[in-house]
Structure formats: C-alpha cells, structure tokens
Image 1 (spheres, rainbow, N blue to C red):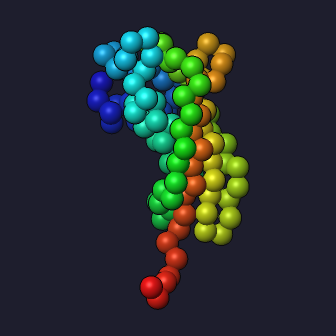
Image 2 (cartoon, one colour):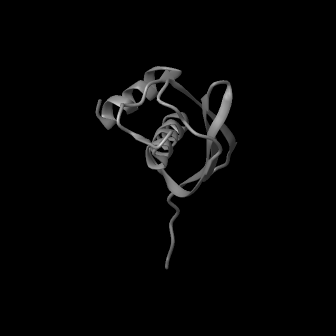
Length: 110
C-alpha cells in the first residue's frame, strides 16, 4: 500500500490499517503515525487556504500492527487560525496525539 492509499483510507474510514513493514521494534514508526494524524487534521479542517503554522506530536504508547482509529476535534476556529487535536487510538487507548495550528495568509508590508 502506498501513502496515497493510506491517506484514502483515512478519508473514507474510521478504522484504518497501515502497511506492513512500518514497525520499529514493537511500535509504528513515529513519522508515519505523525503523517497519518496530520492527514486527518487536514481533512477535518477542509480549508486549503490554511497552511500549517505549528504542530506538536506526543507518542503516548506503542502502536502495534493492527487497525487504528483516528479522531479529530477542532479546538478553536477563528477568523485566521484553526487549532485542532487529532488522536490515534488502538486497544481503546490513545497511543499518539497531534496538536496543530493552521492559519490563513495575511497581508503584510514586511
């Protein structure tokens, strides 16, 4: 499965499978977990004019080779900035959290 295939799953399904071969020891590579959560954030915001301003990822527990569930909650949506939290769930527990801010471009004379 390609990254595009994984992103399509995230857009269409609540529970997704990630490709085999992406484990580092007993957990999913952190970069792939972060990419999955970021994709969920982008899909939840649904505003291509907003670009990523900052992001923080916390790896709470190991993600095993099994289906995961991604949930997104928009914490605040202002005129120019949206803050969102995405959680990656497995075995009824949060395994990773992404907190990100997206913002629309503003005119500047600088």
